[in-house]
Image (cartoon, rainbow, N blue to C red; front, side, top):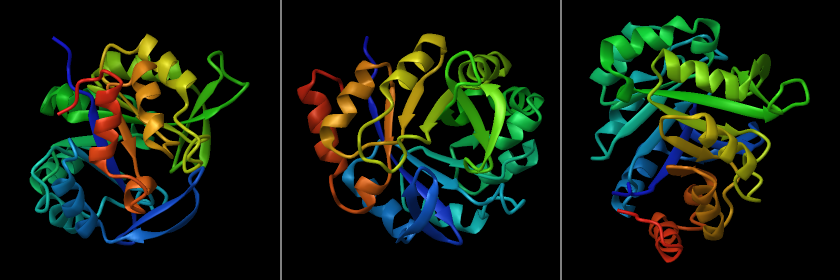
Length: 253
C-alpha cells in the first residue's frame, strides 16, 4: 500500500517572527508564526515544521512559549528544531506541544545525542535536519553545514545521513542551501542520492517556486515536500500543491 505524500509548510523563526531569505542569507520578515500556523492548519497542511533558525547561532534553546502558542493553533504533527542539545530539551519541547524534534548542529558535534533521543523517546520522534551545500571536497559532492548554514563541516552529507540513521534518526529533512529561496525547483540530484542511502522517510526542502516543482521531487524519492516563502507570500496554497501531486498520480491526503 502506497503512503500519501505529505505537504509541509515551514516556519523559519527568528526573534519571534517568521523569516525567509535566499541561500540562508538576507533574512526578511515573513509574518507572525502563530497566525501562519493557524492558516496552514486550515489549508490542510499534513504537518508543520517550526525551526528556530538563530537558536544555535545565539547559543540558546528554542523559544518554548512560541512553540506552545503555535502548537495550540494546529491539530497536525508539529516538528520543532533549533538549539536542541539534550534529552531534557526534547522532553521540554514535547511538553510544550511538539510531536517531533529536529536536530542538526548538536548531533554533528556529538553524534551520541541521536541514540540518546531515539532510545528515550523513539526514532519516530527524531528528525535529522541536514543543511546541505554542494562541495568538491566530499565524495558525494555534498557537504553538511551547521549553525544555520554558516559553518561548513568536513562531513559528506550522504555518509552523515547513513550514520545518523544507524544511530536512530527516524526521518531526514534535507535542506538544500544552494536551492533555498531561489524558486527554481528542488535539488533533484540531492534528493535522489539521499533516497538511495536512506531507509527512513526523506523530506525534500529548498527551492520550491511553482506547483510544478513538487512532483519531480517526489519522483526523485521524496516522501514529503516542504516549502516556506511560496506559502507565506500566498504564491500558492497547500491545496494547489496537492492537486498538482494528485494530477501526477501521487497519493495525497
